[in-house]
Image (cartoon, rainbow, N blue to C red; front, side, top):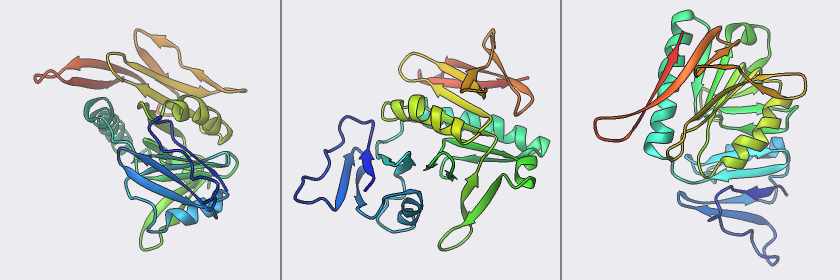
Length: 242
């Protein structure tokens, strides 16, 4: 079966040899048990349609392994930070009629990369959709819940429980998937790192940084992320565009 993995060091160990049929991951947000039959990309996708998977769990299939993140998201350096990207990029996409920007909750699957999971944001341009580089998959009950193929851009915001996944595993996975840009943000504690990575011949290459401004070929704009302090003393982020 696939291996259950969680960056969070508080995760419980795999089930003992006397119970080899499943692996259980336990963290702050609860527990999830991965059945023995979840052994490849298609069985993982079938498992996500069952009632056994917690709705709020961030669950990935990455190169033959199942990754489960049950930790809670930090209010300011994760939730509100993602919201700022949704606000700015969402308006940019809508005003320019560029395509669709999906927040977290979308299931992205790419067979070439043996990858399926939930990016923090995913952009699909109209040209990409028209060319058939992605297809929408209907859910078990109603509507569409999954995109299969290669979007134009993905965003990940690093948390303590996703460091290896976001900064190592997905760097290779998204590159193999052929995704043109990988945006990576890390605002944990007092630091702030925002990098637009463009797909090169052998891997992703960081965009040139000119006074904090970075150019995105996908959007045809330059972006800068700044950090301030709100009236209540909490982190406050602004994504600028020009």
